[in-house]
Image (cartoon, rainbow, N blue to C red):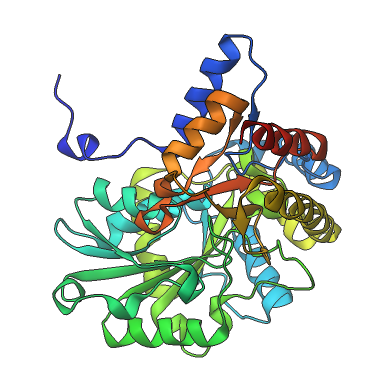
Length: 385
């Protein structure tokens, strides 16, 4: 049987490849430490689990959910936006429940991208910004990112002929994988650029609750005119240690929210209502967890940063996310260094080029690993080098 060409065009999915390599080593009885995937190692808070336990005993929660999210969930999302950022969104028209933000990213292509259309994608970014376009028959143009421009995606360098075919632009700050943060001025330029070129601007704010040294990541929707051209995606995954729960939301421009909801209503049946109730508790209950996790990751960041110079790697000190973005040693490319570390140290790191062309020459180190294992992994890499 012949698959569609769009499947053949897909690159191997980074995290599936990491899992495959890890399982192969484990099958040989080898102790592998994975610093490759950003999956929090700490448990979901008890108050959220308790809310879920109550919610699954409500008979009505076991029926088909709302395609767009329960009204109480959308209202909680709107209240959270107001509390957290001082941003007002209409729960009925400007908020949409998602089965994890990855789902929303993939489905927005089906709402806006026709075959041959272009999406402007960060030169280092979450792979689905690119693969979602492939599945929709669209093309990607990678916005350059480098240390000289503080890893801020350079949309202004996009050629005129590409812009003529462009429909959407993704940005994400704090950024995965580089941990870069954006200034208000950068957001304002992105909004103005999207308005000038009739682009849908999508800000993936998956790491909104993880900041270090007093930094609190902002919302794009705080900026003037943002809702005219943009939506923003928020997730409970990293903020509340709920990666497996698959619950998130989109907020912003009402016509975009409606279009994305139209796609979802024809493809999925919405997020399990009991999970939505648990997410309400996460967002409107005690927020200590977000500060505790930021403190935890900051301590681990400091641990890694202090060790990197000893092993010949350099990195900027992150202000957010759960990653350190490190340059590989001279004489290596990203994939070659990641392979060496896996084969000789039995440590998995993510090669930077898997996140886009601007990622070549870097690796991503995840901080979602217990302190003692993180220390051991760094020691193994040091001994290998």
